[in-house]
Amino acid sequence: MIEIQIADRKALKAEYISVIKPIVLFDIECLKYSIGHLTGVPYKYNKKYFPTSKGMTAHLIKTITGQSAKQNGVKKDKYSATIGTFRAWVHGNKRKNLPVDLVKINSLFNFLISKKGAALEELLTCAPQKLTQLEDALLPPKFRTEENIEIIKLVFDFEKRPKTSSAIKRFFRLKNIVKFCPYCNLNQVEYLQDSVGGTAAVHELDHFFHKAKHRLLSYSLFNLVPSDSTCNGPTHKGTNEFSDKFHLNPYNGGFENDFAFRCTKNAKGKVDRIKLQIKAPLHTRRRWQLNGNLPAIEDGHERGNFNIFKIESRFNSQTQYSRLDRILKAINTRAKASRFNSYWNKKMKLKAKEVYLDWYDETMEGPFQKSKFNEYAMAKLQRDIHDDFFLNQDKSPNNLFVRNLIRNS
Image (cartoon, rainbow, N blue to C red; front, side, top):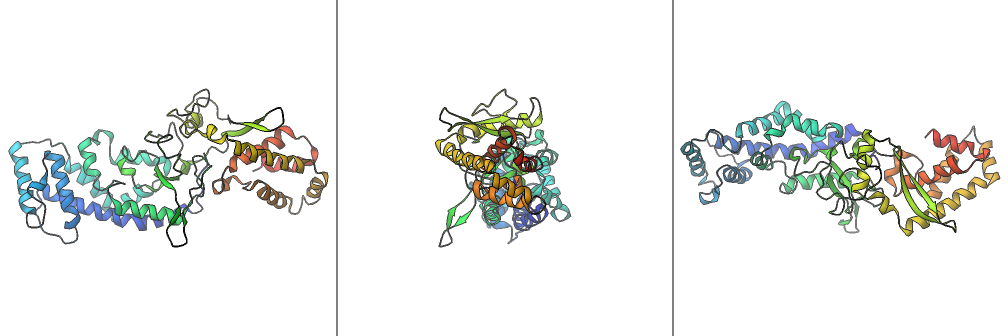
């Protein structure tokens, strides 16, 4: 819902590469070491790679033959015999088409590490709008067989490569690129330490493109979205597969201008309902991403961020109603204060904007600027209610300055 704002993407990408690239490169080299042995490269013990690659070799053999390599062993003193047994199996079965294309997999990893790992750097920091295109170029869909993916997982697996995933989690915790969940703008996702250096609060890392279906994107910086446990939980995103057509990656933009929060009041003048007013026209890209191009919001539908994350329902609580009642009262009081408005008219050429923004930030407990929405909870809700009041309800000429400020922001 709210775009993730990064002041210096170039610097963030460079730092991410410096931390994650060496770890992934090492895993690739270990896997290439194993593949080489299975495809005819003479075995030569390598102290650096062997401790990691022996397990990879065992997994490769089991994936290809269906037989566990543990019966022959992959320890240093039995490794050569295990490789020999595998090669004999391949020769004896005369299988020209093994279930795993080791040559193509090896070519993929050779490409990723060539030119000092330039392609790997691109994969790790690819622009959010180009992630799936890059993945398709590196790993065409027809090549994504279950067996081939099993081998690729030996490098790209967020769950089973703990050294890589731990480094990624640590990077996001240290950077704290957002304070509130960009999917809902409701819950805090900022990492906080306790008094003894432990974790007091932390986000979850959502893979925008599901890590089980998009293995090569498992470590891509802009595929990893700091989110709250509700948005990333089983009742919301869960295992739903996201796509650029039906969902919006918050690194790639937000819905700030595509919808607006509105509220209704009961007979006593109290807020009793918060609604989402979709501005994006039907059959447009944004409308598909908002609610799957459905005629109305439909909680739980697999298409559209609003439906997946149940945005409208989650904003409708008595706590929110009471908050809006307080905000609307403060706005109404200020709008009617002739002295207040007169003060601004006199200061128009000086610091009228700064004066108003200071009042807004203090009263709303959140920012007027859209670029800071992900630093505060419910920031868009409050801004929309404020704007609706001055643009659609208040008609006082004394508040023309405020209306112009809104239109120009």
